[in-house]
Amino acid sequence: MQVLGVDLSDLVSKRRVRLEDLSGKSIAVDAYNAMYQFLAIIRGVSGEPLMDRERRVTSHLSGILYRTTNLAEKGIRLVYVFDGAPPALKEVELKRRMKVKDEALVKYEEARKRGALDEARKYAQMTARLKDTMVDDAKRLLVSMGVPWVQAPSEGEAQAAHLATRGDVWVAGSQDYDSLLFGAPRLIRNLAVTGRRKLPRKDVYVEVEPEIIELNLILSELGLNREQLVDLGILVGTDFNPKGIKGVGPKTALNLIKEHGKIENVVRAVKDGELPENLDTIREIFLNPKVSDNFVIEWKRPDVDGVVSFLCGERAFSEVRVRNALEKMMIGVEYGKGKKTLDAFFG
Image (cartoon, rainbow, N blue to C red):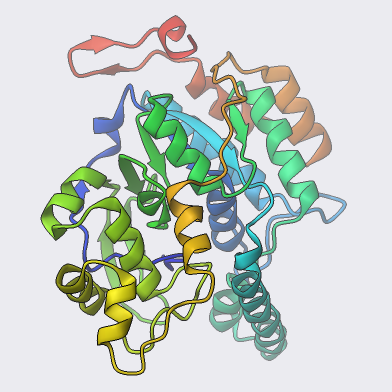
């Protein structure tokens, strides 16, 4: 899985867990992050996304339905957090991502015309675009499913971190590490991505399990405070200064911050070093992000008829499969020492 945002993968300790270990836990999921995963992965043989009769893309709806119900069956409750307006400094990174998608779309069409289906699928996964109508449909589905969602004023990962910090949820869920810079006490990656996964462009498979990363633990292990962790991220490169400092990777950045304390001192010590533009603004985005306390988190029993009417009546989903999936949300599952009742789960 590609890591966007700041890449701390080589620095942080990760504790692997089973989904069963998360029973009874609540997770604030970065909705855009999750939907981009669904749009990239849930595709046909030659890379085409799932569509309804009117050729409206439904891959993201399929992902939300089946991931949410599969996790609910294991006693795991999700809260989806949607992005608001991105900070102005993210514009450069967003334009770069759009350029990558445009280039991948051209290569996808070329590969498809040649009949190179594996190659076409690879490029198709890089073309995913999330439209406003998709977001509206996702929210509509979640409401019908009884799953709470929160609208962030800006970065969804910042809002998810805020929910975890307040104790509204146990952990923030994302593939990116930015949640840690935003102050999430815990981050879970690879949620529901279990088993063997093929590495991109290689005939190699690796075992993938969910992993928990704890902020206090990694700060202790790295010998940093949170402000220094943010400076380390800025040295490596974030969505708000994608290039970082030339020639400085995660391990080098760690050594430099530990030696010099903060990024201003590092830049003076590094040959050809130059302070990122808007350094204080970037720090502020991570240390004091725009978040909202205007939300209510409540899990409700799914409106089965409402979900069926939307997904099956309007989006051509299989009614049998949809009803079977929703049935999972209505079943008390026994884990460990006791049983979870429906009232406890939907309370």
